[in-house]
Amino acid sequence: MKLFNKNGWIVCLIIAISTLTIDANAQCKKFTKKHCLPSLAPFIHNGQLTSAIFNGGETADIEMTFNAGKEYRILVCGQDFFGNVQFKVLDNTRKVLYSSSELETNPSWDFKAATTQQLIIQVSTPKPDKKNQLAQLSARGCVSILVGFKD
Image 1 (cartoon, rainbow, N blue to C red):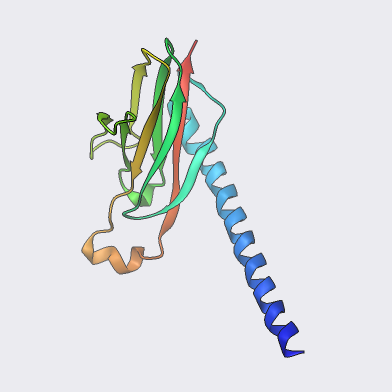
Image 2: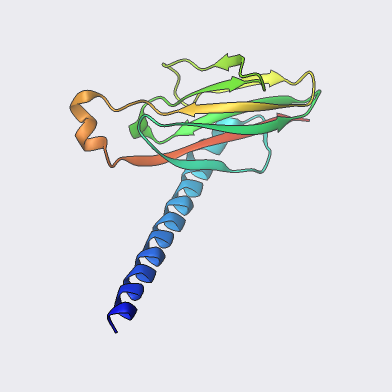
């Protein structure tokens, strides 16, 4: 009977964690649609919602394919408490093609792809400052990468 109770708690814990993750992703999608998509205009959204839950001071890379001859906008949008989320665009040799400014809110980069290529988008959230570090240890929020194109 003790074995069943231990396994029961483990199953309940797994279900609880899964539910919290699904809820966080749903909130992130809602945030992206409401606060980020309007900033993509006049470009047409490519239909992919690429977003994740970040802690302050985290960095993530994502690879995306861009087709020759198309004009694109890459937009990075994060929740306000992060401050200014930054991003870099790197080629496959990790050479920096673009780097956003620390002062930009919801930075974006418009470019025309000369060739079809995979680029790496590296997103970084600011580290919490020393005085607010304890308050922000558990601060997690949504960061979205949106890609738009022109016909």
